[in-house]
Image 1 (tube, one colour):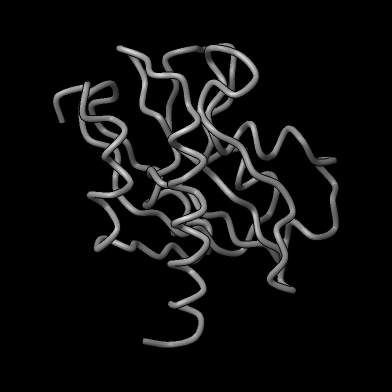
Image 2: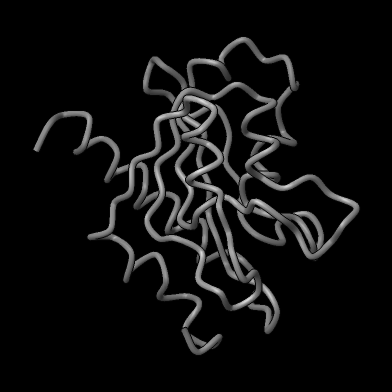
Length: 153
């Protein structure tokens, strides 16, 4: 296991802890997200429904930063769930679009979005199409899904 992979797992476990802070919802997943700079230091973090009932984890973390923060183009985003490519709340941009706008270079996820709320999430594909490296830590998927069992996954 490379040093980078070991570091990825540590940050993902932090994101999983944040996901546990999300208020449970019958209509949305509990997700945690951490943004880490190129220097390996946390820049921001967030979780689902942290600031309002519609906010997604990545959105919450990005909202705490200036959109032109010079650290973002060199950052890695750790999200327990694949960033959304479409939203039920039409008044908000999907998280993939937000990540593309932020210019992050890397996204690490634990599990892909199932068809529970969105039939065809293509967050990973859309990020990769735009040159963003996407890493999937599938061995942490069960742990990352654990706080969502009430949704009958």
